[in-house]
Length: 425
Image 1 (spheres, rainbow, N blue to C red):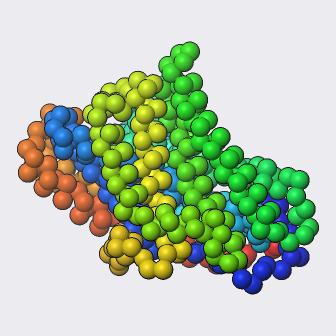
Image 2 (cartoon, rainbow, N blue to C red):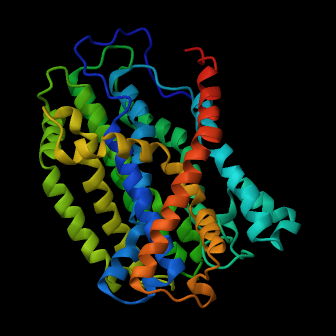
Image 3 (cartoon, one colour):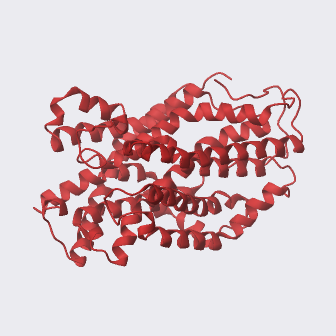
């Protein structure tokens, strides 16, 4: 499957080139990973059960998940969106899937090979336990053998299942959006500005419908019979990816405007200039999310309305945080936040953020075992200062293991990915 394109058309020389990489987005990925780590350590120490304002804030560190999902939608869909608007070639699907597999699986499989036999010895005797996690299908088991969101040491992997589901569905979505955008247009002729605007608006409208459908899928998880495992699958969470895909369309649309002063360019520039206001909106939405409106403080089963409100608020946060950074190329000078997130330290943490996500529970359990500590689930009690100390120790352990994972597993796989011959156009 290939997104429709016309290879024989020369690209207009005056078109702006979309950025292949933005350092500030790496820094944002590091912040999202830190937020998730903070929540998980707060759960292990029991601090998120204290009912204080600070514990409510820490319990909502899972807001890093929609930020991750929005970044995936932005970065992965942007080449396809640009191909639809400009007619330039897009990546071959098989090459795209191969790159995703080499990026995700080697380090992930290493975590599974350690976590299941060491922390789940009973499950390690059954082939289905291994297959579920090695194939990333554990979310679809309505009667799992573990408690909570996953097996011990692998609880956070539910979001990786959703991420990989999006990887597999994205080429189909890209083809469908391209078909909708290019219907009744002559793709054998150079696209005029009117054609580009029409295609972009159609894609944005389709993405809006796709996003709204997530709320309907959430209803299916509660009615007519509760099937709460369905909440942790792609359909109810597609809105977070669609948010990033909409940002991708906006940036591709602005890049396709030759004069740099069209409606999309002005919009991107305005959002980038209003980064402070966007972050304020994100902060207000996060403050509302840190209330019982979005469900219990930590753990427990949220109601349908809790889940719907949380999904909507987290979508606002993801949009308000990612969009100003993604639209920085349309601003004359980067904002302070963009410069900070693009600094060397944040960029490095962004590079190893996948390892931080993968290894955080194994690092935490290793830290607890080394100091002969008990988690809150085994009657361990910690004061506020002790919880801070545990957080610092687990963070150091996690970063150290993540650095090793990056250089020993992830980078070799990426080099192998880079040596692959490009697919013929």
